[in-house]
Image (cartoon, rainbow, N blue to C red; front, side, top):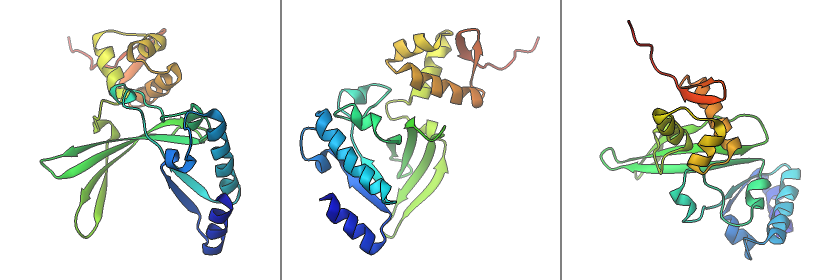
Length: 200
């Protein structure tokens, strides 16, 4: 029960609880708004006690084929967390290492940039180094998909969202990040790639 967890954390000065996974923790219908809301009300109790919670969830098989992923189950899995990250990974068989990309899909604490990591496993330890998150292909990040579409023609935010099956707000955030990286620029309502000037 939540009371037992709180007691254990208090007695041992634990400040982080990892829940793997949300569906197992609920132990009921993950599509039920009532059960998910009740689950997060218990999470809020831990947060109020100064305990940070990391909740691991999954996406549906159907959503794995798209560019934008949401947690499986009730929409409240996406609405209640203050910050939600999507983890994508790929394995480099030649170099025997994993590439990991963390992409912020929701935040109530301001803009959070993607995080890229390379991980090498050994019998003794895990070794991590930083890398560019956009190099993690997975099923292609939304940023990569946007750049591919804009390679063909300029588009508005709404057109990009419709073309990629993504939420307009997510597309806007991604476009803002790409503009900061000087990869895209805005021309009126249209977004287009930043191309190198051609010498005369």
